[in-house]
Length: 113
Image (cartoon, rainbow, N blue to C red; front, side):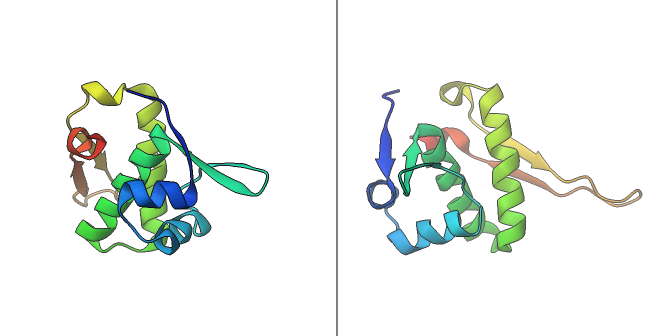
């Protein structure tokens, strides 16, 4: 995969979303791209994390806080796996004892394309 580094407006164009929507995900700490000289820079992993966050937001209609937690868990797992070999990733909650966990399956392979 070709390594990229894009500014926020460039990243939003690649993702096909409004720059303000991407800025909101950064502002609410759902995404945490690198920042240099007051400019946010998105690499391949950040773009994929943004795609996952947008997918979860659209699919689950979840709160910003929960979306940030899901995205953080995804990003941590992403460092352990090579995305080109991963088709799906599962996120599972840890509920109080006696309750069923919530499980979300994310089509990482499709989103990475």
